[in-house]
Image 1 (spheres, rainbow, N blue to C red):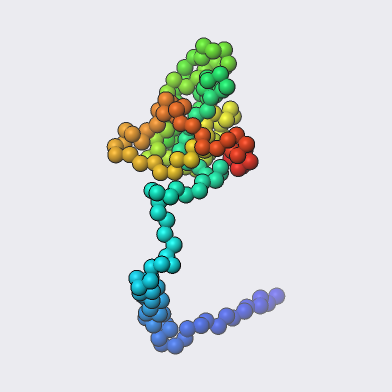
Image 2: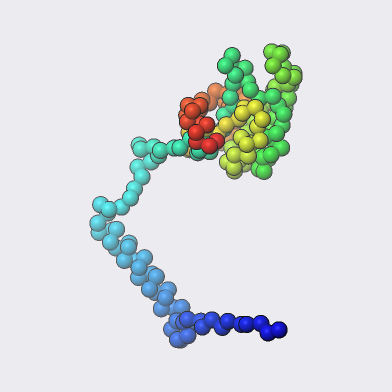
Length: 174
């Protein structure tokens, strides 16, 4: 049994094409041409004036985290450690304590998220069985001057509101 072999002719057999120097100069000429055109007439440049004009954010955007509450104001989190276990960056730290309101057996006493280690993958949101953690705050610019300010505690997570209504959030596929 013979195998059919297809031979493909390789382009670029001339000396200059094999040297790649001509092609590099062609690419540099295109780049330099764009630079000169934009330098002389910058009226057609697409520019975002970021701090003044905020970008439009869809409900599917994975922004900063928040913890949700029940209608009566109690926290939805039952400290099941699913988000902490599912986090590939291991940036979530939870300590459980007993709950006195009769909803479940436990609640988080400590719930910290280190935003400097978070990769914003959304696995914590997907893993939560109680829909207690969300990334729908609409906060896309997370900055801080020191490391301690980038660790969100349970109070910070509960104080942050969602940027979208429940209908927009559910319609957005989150």
